[in-house]
Amino acid sequence: MRDAHGAADGGRNDMSMTRRVLLGSAVAVAAGAGTAAAAGAGSGPAATPPLWREFRRTPFTHPQIPYIGRAGCHGGAARPPRRPVVADVRDFGAVADGTTDCAPAINRAIAAAGRAGGGTVTVPSGTFRIDDVIRLDRSHVVLRGAGSGRTTLYATKHLTELIGAYGSRYGGDKSGWSWAGGLIWLAPRARWESLVAAIRAKAWPYEGWTGNRRDEWRPLTAVAPARLGSWTITVTDASSLRPGALVLLRLADDADHTLLEHMCGGGPGPETYVWDDKTKLTSYVPYEWPVRITRVRGRKVTLERPLPLDVRPEWNPQLTTHVPELTGSGVEGLTLEAAETPQRPHLLDRGHNGVVLQCAFDCWVDDVTVRHVDNGFGLVSASACTLRRTRVTGRGSHHPYFCREGSHDNLVEDFTIEERTSPAPVGTQLHGINVEGLSSYNVWSRGDMRTGTFDSHRGLPFANVRTDITVNNDGRHGGDASAGPLFGARFTHWNIRVTNARAGMVRIDGLAPYSATVGIDEVREFDQIDVPDLTGDLHARLELYGSPHALRPRNLYEAQRAYRPSSTHVNGVES
Image (cartoon, rainbow, N blue to C red; front, side, top):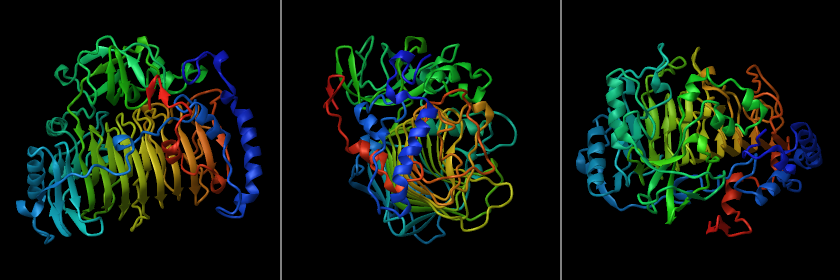
């Protein structure tokens, strides 16, 4: 039997104790901290969970906690790049009168900035009506308002009107705008054009980094076997690789689905799970992980982030090309308000959607509010992007945040989901902070969720972290049975304050393999009760249960950012 890193049972250390033993030890730890925690936040001594001490010894290969210290734009940089102002939307015809359609003027300003090689397009205070999609399809272009409380883009139409009905590849009357597309849409021009053409032709559009046509990607080189957590790989031919280049690490599955098993941590549970009928899940494979190269020496290639998985010959590991990425672009300081309409029944959204980043890398959204939207902020095949100081408000949303189609290494921090301003119509659905579709190593940090839940939407997401979040846990998770397990390995929930004591998707030690639930309030089950997808010992950890206020470090992402291993070298390269 293999463990989370493919090692034999005999190679396990004390971190891989059975779930029964771990739960017992966690109860003892929680009991010791319970008196102090019961007195109120900050009133007792801080408690450091054993998991954090273990992680510090093996930060890149810990079996339960993923390394997410480099998540976000430019490796989690505190501030996005500042680009010089090159255009003002008023110079292209935009008028802040709330009645003139300013979408053509804003898009012309963005195009002009793109032709100039990048820069900032400013939108001053006021309300600007938009009757079309705002397309940031050029790299190094920033759309900047005067602040989310001062600049408003008022969207009068939805995506079904503007582009067309977006059906589901699985048939029925489901609307693809229920999980894709935004009225502010950051995507490279090639991907945007192919999406729109497919939708208008009533075909299913390919959403990811590579397509079905051979001219959309090509192999660059094969990759030698390597272990999860490695920063340096060996390739067959490095002649086409250079520092700073973005490449895809592409891993295909084999007939026995050992790649999917590995994403779940390996062992008897994943080995006996039935994968072949999970057609939606298998459509997400090959796994594609975008990463920048930092150094090339001979056939040794150093990456900006450690490997998210083992690299094994049976998965035909390759570095490949991809659709040209959108990079260095952002949206800042504005509110996108959709015309207020009742929320539609579940999966029939028309596309009053907010801000979506697609095939974007090192892009960002900062100080942006969306109001009265079907879906708020989306990450679709997006990686290394940061959403900071974002807010979802208004009449209620299907997905306030969604992260899907192989999105990796993203950071969502200082986010707020406000209480809905009107009651939910019958037949609608509320999820929350969604992750699905083999998405991995994403972080949600410092959140205030006044409604919603931690929506793992199936599709085997793995190695994602939610930390330092207060949640009124009143949403429900989703996901089709054909999308496979709710969780893969190394999911971590760390310091979660649950204001209504509802368990769903927050306490995950009974659901997620090789997971960590640390410092959450005591919770109880409700009517949506899930059973684990995988049989047997999950090797999950539960620590400081019932004591989020006593937990140190309080924020797992910030602690990983601040922590430096005792050795300053990773694989012989300074990290």
